[in-house]
Length: 600
Image 1 (cartoon, rainbow, N blue to C red):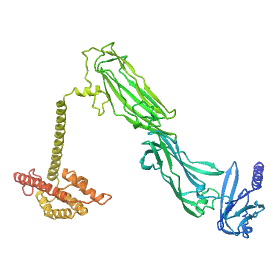
Image 2: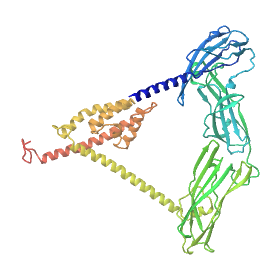
Image 3: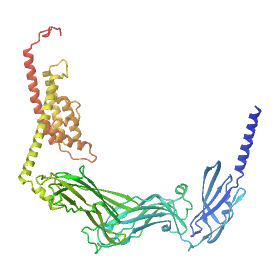
Image 4: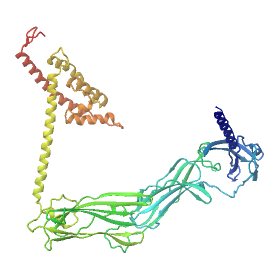
């Protein structure tokens, strides 16, 4: 027990000395004013900051002699690090100087502490002028300044701001006369930069620019609009400043930027102008198993191009010069790209299928030449060539083994050998094939329509012959009862259609479908399955009912569809009722019992 008491007292003593040491930490007092130079009738903000154990407030009464005290604000924060607690308090007061010239802000007392005196100046021509452009400005930079046509230009749009922003908007770059294509890139994270001794927050956007023509192009000025605190009332960047200070609208416009676009280099000898930082060709051959290919075997080449600083769509098709014994088919290319802050890279991929149609005349060897792509290096300013190595094929087979390749047609033939293949088929054979395919399509279509119609009729016959909506009525009595209300329902449909009233038409149509036709559930989507006429008219009705914008609806088509189908329905119900009468005559019921002898 004594041991526990000693431990308790030791803990209390240690806690006491810890709290005492924490409270004994000296407070740190600082003071600053912003701005230090103002014009007459302009205000400034004096901030007193205290860090540490201090519970007193600053005494601003000493300022009343030389300043008007307009507004007071204060804030506090608590920071806990490594077991210690640091309390920070800020007191801010808005001051209006009473006289011109230099004025001393005297030392301000905070408990046992005092601040350092400061000097401010009121002048019509202040030594330091803080304009709005210095607080917020826009910079547009293009690299390079004199690019080639169709080459990539890296465009950076930067917003510098040294004050809090609210409801800020920055316009996107606009190219005058649409003289270039512009693509947004991945922008850099926001960062800070010190310019002229002042710290700015920077928002930077990056774009890839591709000039469409040579000559001068102009990038229109960028515009910034937003709310910022009053010009002479900001010292620190904080949420407190943003909502505690008066704000005004700010409109900043940058300078336009003009680029001199160079035409295609005169020394370039390639067919297609491809300006880029780097171009690489890569390929993958898919060969039959073994070291030899046979007549009739196909070989696939997956070829790709990666171009740094060039769009994939700008890369042209490849020109192939293959032996007469080989035919080929070129599939449509696929385009992709990667983007970063440093620019855009295009990726073009394409599959080419080669087929050996007959053995070579000499040595049973065929050579597929290498692929070449000429391009212009914008870094070294000279022509270069990307190359994909060719291959040599050893072919086994005889001259009698001649194969006609069955490649699909390609809209843009790349050599004479492709056109020779399509010339092998007579025109009448192609025409006959098209006619046959058309006949088969319409046959299936008509078969589907007839089958759908028969299914609906069979369903109606089954429903009308098996369902008994009214247990104590015969089918004939039920049909007669429905027919008694039918003219009224049809009249409602007719009036709604003629008045072009979609809501009334929907209600009357659903009542007709439920009570006369027996469709359940009687909703528009089910009614639309009756036939193609209803499908078309229900779609127009639904558009008028549910479209966001009011649509003009004409109901003549729906009324005609109802009339035609109602006539067909009446003919079907007449047949069913007559059949029921015949069955009743063949098997007359005996009063009080049925044919099976059971009492009903």
